[in-house]
Amino acid sequence: MKDKNFDELKITGLRINYLHVCKRKLWLFDRGIRMEHTSNMVLLGSLLQDYYYQRKERKNILIDNLIQIDIIDNESIREVKYSNKLKEADEAQLLYYLYYLKRLGVSKKGILNYPKIKRREELILTEELEKEVEKDLEEAKKVLSLNKPPKVEKKTFCSKCAYFEFCWS
Image (tube, rainbow, N blue to C red; front, side, top):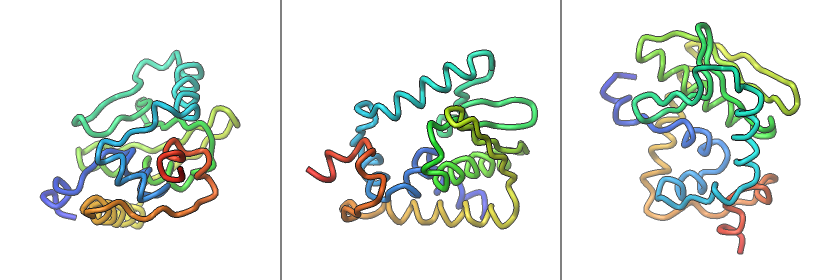
């Protein structure tokens, strides 16, 4: 992907996560319809990060006013998640951060931390995974360019989503 094309496609990491969770949620979030403040799961995730990683100095690092990395150290970047039930979306978000940093000339490994279940997963950005990130960016652009939100689609985790009432009432 050329730099010019990347500049047109780059978005927040949360939007990449939402692309994998629910395209409708991505579209709504992008239009300023935010329901996360009503979610206990979002609050718990934030509290977990503050509790388990209070000694880490470099937390919540905002880069280019676009991506926010939970923790950065010399070798890695970390994303802290409440549970691994949306692992694919978590991985996509972290890989996007690694991809973004690589474009800035920074090479790190990624670690997904699930402190509640005492699990961590290491991710290394490969050329094959870079292509997946680029496909995600193209797909996100398609979803965000729609005039109407994608139709409601029942998923196993809908009942725990912050947008549940919005979509299903």
